Amino acid sequence: MRWMLMLAAVVGLVGCDLLGRGTSPISAEVYPSPRRAAWEEEVQVSLPWRAGGGLRLSLAGEEVTGLRTEPEGSGSKVFFKVPRNFWGGPQALDITDGANRATGSLTVLGESVGAGALVVLKPGVTDGAFAQQIGGAGLRVVPNAKGEPSVPLGAASGPCAGRLAQVAQAPGPPLAVGALLERLETAAAGAIVDLDGILGIDPLTGYDTGSDLDPSPNSSPINARQAIQRNPASNFTGAGTTIAVIDTGVASLTGLNLRTGGADFTNLDTPNPNLDEYRDGLGHGTAAAVLAADAAYGVAPAAGILPIKSCDKNGKCPLAAVIRGICHAVAYAEGNKNQKLILNLSLGSDTPSEIVYIVLKDALMKRGVDGLPTVAAAGNQWAIRSSKKGTLHHFPASFGGSRGLSVSREPARRMTPLKGLLSVGAVGLYSSAFRVSGFSNQGDFVDLVAPGERVRSLRPANLEAEFTGTSFAAPLVAGAAAVVRQASALTPLTPEALELTLLANLTNPSGLGDAPEEARGQGMLDMTRGP
Image (cartoon, rainbow, N blue to C red; front, side, top):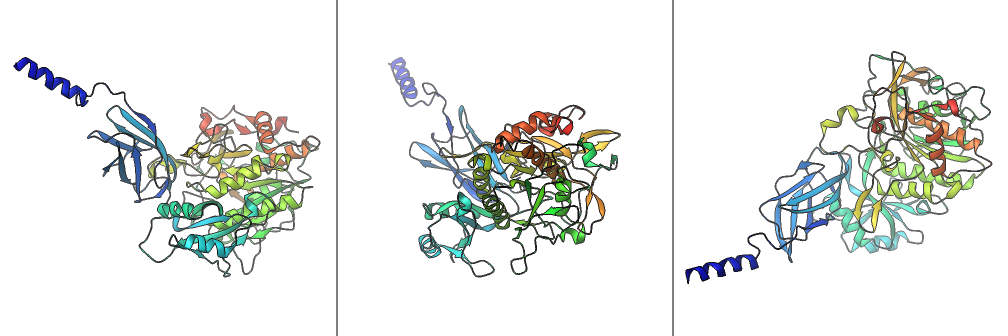
């Protein structure tokens, strides 16, 4: 009798799976809510199993503590707060519980993200209708400095044909920015192209804007044109192309061919795209433009420069100004098809802008040979990457690359690598040999490298100076792209084809020491085989 009772008890345990037999481990992809979250913001994830005592959750390999769970049907909800001092951008989410495992991605909204949102309204949606639509969700439109509820982005087609508006929470219990974006996305369904949290983008991201990057004391000054072995006798000098420099403004120097039709989105009352006041006259946009297309210093001395000012004298680039700057370039290209346009973006942030992503995707991948090849600085934070937790990104450069960054948001909304976007790291000159600069960001998004440490260029006052940062490597590649674009005028290239052509023919992977591919990409810009 005792033997029969024991057998019945064991059968009962097996039927309830308390012994852990008879059930296969669960593997799942999960999508956090909100899918973008700021530091200290609470996030929840739904698991397809009932959470047990072995539950562990990590972001980019960093274990997150303070988890709490609630039953949800046959599964569980897990709640956690985003740790402070985390790099912004998509971070891998990994949840384990015994043999069960769930993976996903959470976009961390970095240090510079504020408490509001930007949206691009679809053409045909009126300001009044949009305000009414979101008002029921406790949200409101915030007029700009001129009292306008939205501003047209200026293009005839694509997302830049819409209008940019700022949205904030109406009075009430405060929402964290991730939750606000989630609520806005639901409330504004059908009326918007895409949305973003408000953030500032700094061309010298990762460093105090009160001081420039410090080059290595062992490095030597660089004449960039000589370093990349630009052939001065080449018949191709970038003629017929225009490089849009979205930056701190570009001074009217005699060696630059400045196009009319530039714009200033930082000084709305007294706009002047030719005023570069960065660092009390040191300049940033001017030095970049000179390296791209100056008669004496530039890679493409016959290319034009379209000055678009989206960054202020402190190097801060408000996201709204960056979006308007890119869209201004798109509109300019639509109206000036005789000038093949190239974008130079010597700026960035560790937090991705979804609006910038969709605008660049349209400009790069949906306009064929009329698309806008784009060059972006890879960023300067590599030497301080351990100052925060998580994986270091730099956008918009991280949107591109040969392998690039694929961000999982939800099944129908994924950011895949942008084709035609060239992400550029920096090299310095050390004892007659080039080496990848210690500050230059690394990752599978880096396409190539170019001189970016103690590079000779010009200040707005037309005085020579040395400049350091990936901000100054990028325009050398923009100039090379202008040369390739001129050389292929009879058989125009799409942005993707131009990227492939440049990487295949104008890079040299040798001579950079033992730098891994994630540091050097396809190699250093080398125009020995150039047109």
